[in-house]
Image (cartoon, rainbow, N blue to C red; front, side, top):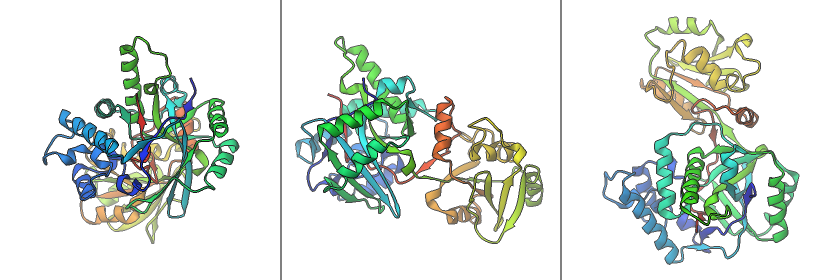
Length: 413
């Protein structure tokens, strides 16, 4: 089995991408999704967040929600809004957000290679979130939310990307958040073979985002294999919908922290404790760290620069060396008393796309006592952690721009 393979994508019919394109299912709550889909009967939110078409207060995980998603999906296929390609293809997918541009490939990734960690992970998953995705895949008999993958960039893939994307795109749509999504269908048999063979020669590729979707695809594949006496390994359920980008085009933003209180300390007592592990200097403006092991701290209307003492940076531990770990292990846990950031309600996380003003707002409002700005995790760090078979602390990476839902889906028949 190949690491990746082409597939017959289900896509918006010509001229319908604007009607269909939607944000990922997990970046909107139900109320936001209902508002975004208002007056847009073919928005993919009717498939990815189908509770918006049921009475207010419906449990998003109720059986009737998945059934409504299936009905909406079939309706859009029957009405010709979504159309399946006649032959297996790859799809070059370009995202443009401001000055940032990245071009990847929509592929079907191998579940077997995910199971053996050739498609490498760096996060734990939650069973309840896996269960939700399993139910959604089974209800639709399709994967509609792509897993966000990355690979060490390849000249061979870059060359094909340049050639294919020089032509007219098959889809060119700007979403309501201003991100431009452009897709070119790659149908040339020679290009398809080169892409497949180039990836097959790679030792591994990496999950950037979508650990629950990939875990769910693995569970669906295992269940269907067990139920299929004629299982051959080539069935569509053995692969999962993915978009894979070269590592040198990926953009990871900072993932910042805010904390509700100072664990019973005054400002002065707190800063004195921080000085035991960090060099602390006042800043005359909002502080966005410019290097690893450097942090910004906003407390009582004042920004500070924190530089961790070099002897506290582990030499050979890819997880403990991460900035999110350095802050957690030397300040958030020992000083603020937050040892389990997954469950502790005293800490919250703010994606860097929101900017430093959001950190100031949450502290100035009195909602939070202190905020920390971080330097972004790098792609090399992510891959080092995955290569070591380790996992990152929660909320270590914030990828932008986000993939859209609805532009290419993977049917499992």
